[in-house]
Length: 396
Ligand SMILES: *Cc1c(COP(=O)(O)O)cnc(C)c1O
View 1: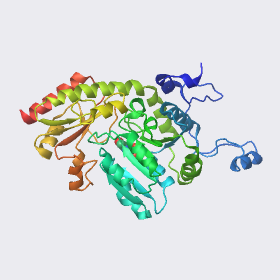
View 2: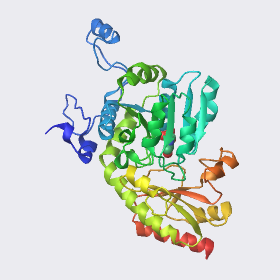
View 3: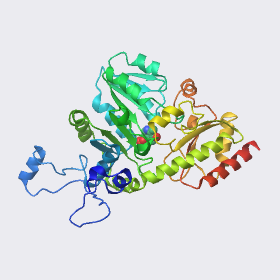
View 4: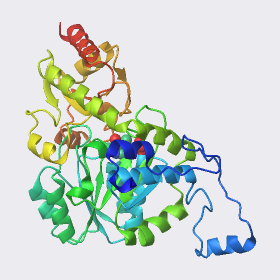
């Protein structure tokens, strides 16, 4: 049986495994910074890149290597580099490919720290950044009339679950000379494969659905282009040190084993909860790509296998009522993380997007009453009962 025909569930369990001389069944956790050479000559040859072997864990480590190979297999990408966090993955990708005078176009609805990189870090190096409404192809077309080096987008976006038409944006971006980077955290590789829709690089915060149980931080950069690896990403990566720790890679290898089951169960629960919220007293709007009421439902279903694990909804009465609703929840925990077995809720306006200017926040659809819910793996009936009792407490 060839590895190349393995289906996703099998890849998630067996992908990338390399066993040591001890024939261990479970992936080995190699906690080592350095590696021993048989001779000074072997070491010299390694540094001359005549021999490919482990050299230093900032460059590569066996446990991290297994994680990278498994991630690449699931994504259908030639290359994967694992990073310490999701932001390290995004920052490394951008810094490795950009130089002063370059131009970047990004969708406005990005993770808060990605917005910070666009607005505060890249301009410091003479890089022009342009933000567009991700769901408006006219704005992408206008912005991509000028030569551009990179496009960054998130779909579905955090926290309003807007969908970007990846293939159409990729076509425009490629004409402008740009590489397209897709932050695929909310969809996961189980639901959506951006490389199939024209993306050049896929980035993850593996802190979320890859770990899946709220334990370790991590990130991943995935792509097919060898030149991007050899000339841009690898030299930057080796010399600046965003590498993932072996322990985190080991934990996340275990996370990957159950990722397809978890993600599908998250989606099933999210669909049930989203439908329930649509009729719950005090809830004025539900943002969930799997619902027919989502304005881009058809596009979402074209790009994703299911509606996704995340949703957001608006509480009538602004911040006070939204806070009261959060405080009344018993099972669902107040936490700004996401992608955990436990259901987690946050008020984006005062947490993840509190640093975004008010006008911009409202333009993004992040109203004072908006709550983001990372639907967990509990029984959906218990989640519904919890939401119902919170609604009763706040709205009677
Ligand atoms: C969490 C997250 C990130 C950042 O990842 P970290 O692991 O926290 O650095 C980036 N993008 C999205 C969409 C996220 O949810």
